Length: 490
Ligand SMILES: Cc1ncc(COP(=O)(O)O)c(C=O)c1O
Image (tube, rainbow, N blue to C red; front, side):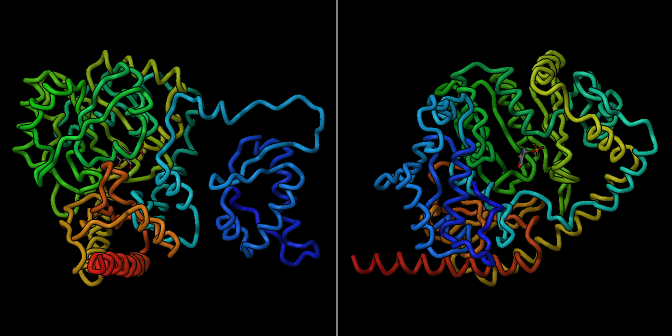
């Protein structure tokens, strides 16, 4: 909320006065309207690098002036604008904010999104390539080549650049998908594809089946569109397809969302047999699927079996791909492949939403796919991820072997670490953040999960991976011992 500003310790103006003046400015210029809840005293003290007593002095001053009001147990809220006595009341932005149709992210996700930009934090959960894995040099080559051509600076056509769709068609053919450019829509990342599907193909009240756990539980897209998520258990071969008819009867699901290759968060690769079974069951049930395949090319040991879409002879699969996990999430380019009426409908909504994905980004991606740079980069990236995986698994064995177990993933970014005993993961998340470690706890991916932590070996540096896992192990041991002691005293 306040990130970036710090009081000036060299100044003659007392710290508490600088802080109260800063907050007063936030209120009087309208950045913090009436009803805004301001951060806790402890948070403000940490953020500004001052003692809590300094914060108390600053807030007391603002409270005395009628700008803030402290609720017992409910934090401190902005109450007034003393600088404009007699002026009409400002709009009640807080009630507007609370009325928006889109749900908020769950608090832990909001906290992660904020903490990811703190330089002092080791990001043990981040599902993104580390800065040193992003292909700076190759991207410079691509941009230089692009800068000597006529650059696409206008809007692209509704489904995205025709030539890029042609290259994507060739790209996906390498793993068995036959898709004409007319059945491909370029989107601003796979996440946007999910959003378009939620608002363009389904009605409120629909039920979406998905793996339990799943990445989809961590984003409120379908919830905001008035839909329910119903998780179907997984085993080591993937979603238990045999259970689908029973679930269908009970919940009447409209669609099934699956991540068959290097599943987020478990890392599981759906076996070939399970893929065949899933396609058969969904075909029989008339249940369409979304196949989210954004991790496919990140195999380390061996490529995963062919996508579901490769065996789709009746158009029941909507297939999602993206360059976010392999080349650059900043490009914001992904694609959806499906039957033409579906793609046309989603393209129409996309035009209403943003007039198409960035045409410059599309041109960049076309160069990546057409020049051979993508394949070269992937070969190198796989080696680096293999090394990172080794380091992470070693550190886990060394520091957490007595407290947790895990399957070594065959690719992707994630190790789904299972604690041998349940721990309050919200408390562990908070304690870890205090110790400078950012975690993705299991409850992000499965309601009440107090058993798992998603560790990513893709983002933190090798040194931070070891340090982070060590520090995490100390917290887990302390917490486990604490519960053991409490139990024996009961
Ligand atoms: C399974 C899955 N799908 C989609 C996304 C989002 O991808 P994009 O950056 O292309 O929107 C992620 C990112 O974490 C993911 O894990």
